[in-house]
Length: 468
Image (cartoon, rainbow, N blue to C red; front, side, top):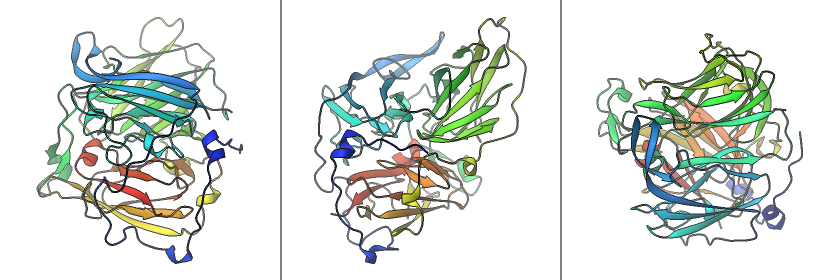
């Protein structure tokens, strides 16, 4: 395992406070907590001397997903996906965002820990005031952890209007060699306006229904439909790193490449011990990096199929130099990645052993009325904060009493689930259970929520607050 370098902000930070033994085993919510997301003053932004500066404009634009199919959308710099933001590990990045939309907006830097930079997390009412139309805001943060991440709006259903883009942080040291790389952003094709619908199919005939997304009409890879697919160009003998980002609001995807195996090397940014599989499932907002050895010349389909959905699948093409233009016939093997296959290369000692505080969380919904998703029976913003203390080893124990899977995302921290570090984990439906641990090392107010956008929109979220 390699020793990680401290960022400049970590080197300057002073941590304080000791963990009281009396806190051990405490439950999540303290009585009398103010449930308003605006509790207390918003954090003050801090600015320094950035290594890289970007500018983005959130604007209304024409989105083309094929030469004969376009729709009105909201994008960054009139691009979908938005422009790539790329930096080296440990650098400080500044991004100035101008809001040219007809309503307020923010940007969340999904995967960034933002140690000491809580004001840059992009959650309106929790870390900042939303950016009003015609105004701009400057985000600035240290690039940690390295790996494949992304950025997106954190206001309402704006993510499903195409306000998203890749955020790539290059590692100082590579634990797996590769020759070239490509980022593949997986998303739903929703040409109409996003809106919350009640889905009876999710209730599976039990009466009533749950809040859900409108039905998508296709699956996109880098903003393209299968009839005009994205091409990934390779030369025979190359090792190509594919950075996979599930940017969908409401879809889990199964990914595989005909005639090729996948060497899984990273998840949610950080490195894992390499694992060879044929296919993997990638939940909403998760990221996986895979290395593919280009040993089979031709033009091979890259398959992206929505899981438990009637939405048409997506496709890209792995295109070898010198291929004759015909699609090569092949197949995808049965070895599917399991969470238990993954082992982080970084030390997890700090989050091992007995936790100081255990937080029990029940994920559910009000099916009969079809209007809310809940955590412990409460819907955000009318929900109690979850309190933790600096330095604590915290454990979240989640049980899912709904029939629907929930991709749960914790801002400002990485957590240990099994033997791997992640920031998003899928809790299976029908009494599925997932436990994760993390160290409370980043004070501030942080969002914890389901990243199914329509579950979040109807209440499945909490604010994590550090005790003073």
